[in-house]
Picture 1: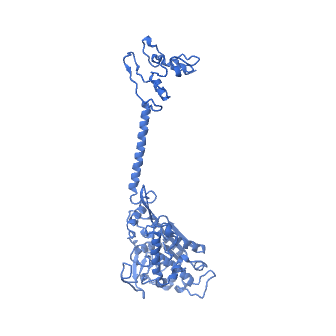
Picture 2: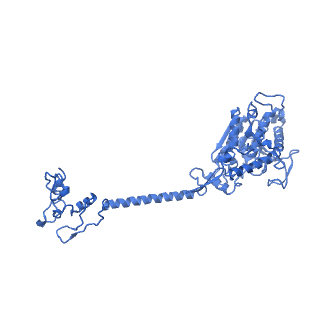
Length: 505
């Protein structure tokens, strides 16, 4: 029986008291807590000194402030009159006015808690807004700031504004360049030639690392440019050749093959084959190498983009011309290279292998801009930003220019290596091949599908796919003008050098 006397009552057995009313239930030990003299006793009521005379016969209209507050919280009424406090009955007890509706009351401490929580919520919202603004500011170059490096975001921003920008500008120190004019290689780039390098063309460029000697690996590189642009000394190829030479120790040759419309598939392949034959036995300027040394030096072929496709076509042609087939070597077919020499390996960056231009990633990697609350972001192929069908039409027109009047070459397994099968890939005769491609490229599948088929038929394949990278990204190793290098490009160059050293050992 702990309740009745706690509110100043006697705590009768029925739990009721004229001072406690509804709160006197049960009587008990805390009765004296609010004891005191009655109203006639002239002694003011003070909490803790007995009963409060103002509670006499007033039912639920309890004048004690604690009672009234508690009653309001419990849903009761009353407690609206001012009550006497202290010894002077004329001094009013000022009671805080409040809404009598259930749950509306807040005492001072509770009010403070509400204010503190509201302030904390506002602070949190302000902090979130500041973080959002900071992210927006930091991702101004490219909204995927938190997902990619500063250099990649910088390159994305530059390439979006100008897809022809940002190729490497510096040749590696210590690399020497020689320009060589071979017999019957001259051609003329006139008005119908798309390249900006006009006039007499056809000279080869050789890049020698400091360590070069007659036994050094030799790499013939077929430059890209859709078979319509580029040269051995422009468009970033001098820089690329010097970087490969430094890392691999190889002597790099870039032939200046005839570009479309003067050159087509047959003309370009013939030019590249003669360049390989020359390179295999060349004296190489001041090195004065003899043919025996040339026979010892490992011979590689490589290329990028369109040039990568032509390099792979040459790999397949030499295999077939060498007599390799799924049924064994046909010794009646002569070797295409001097002294029975075979290719030691092939290296290609973003090769164009499907002249039908309908590989899956023409669609799935098509360029897109996504607009949302965080601003616009870009996905897909940054270099070729047309609609998938527009890219298909433009690339096909380019491919048709390459094959000339013979449209059957668009699906020929040598001219268009994407379509190579068991005859071209099986039975041995293929050198080890290293592929590097960006995952965002429209022609990513050109590398993936060819490389997988070649591996299926037993070829030694190294395939590196770099997430988020664009077409020919190894030629952007300096970071598009950013303070830091593009590590993905650096890695490709380093792995290319390692590949050549390993195969040549």
